[in-house]
Length: 88
Image (cartoon, rainbow, N blue to C red; front, side, top):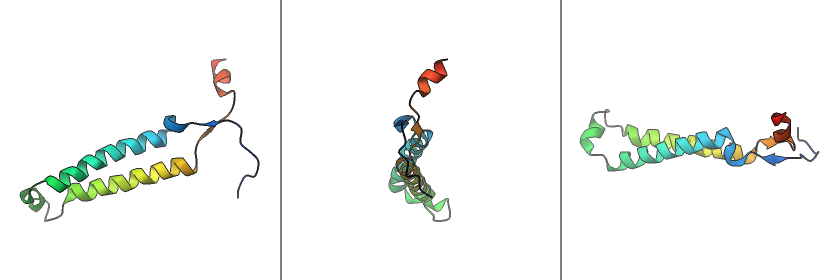
């Protein structure tokens, strides 16, 4: 089911909540990946040999990428005149 009719308005862009969520997950994921790469083996041994920071950071980066992709493929369209209607 695709809409062949043109949409009037503009996209929310950076104000889309999916973009904000993706950015937060990307920042925290990148920090965890760096921590996972530089942490000593003694810290890895505490988690039964699994580098939990590295894997959780990678999962967060994948999650952030999926949110960025979702926001890019299905942008939120703000109808023309929405700001004037809200002002009353």
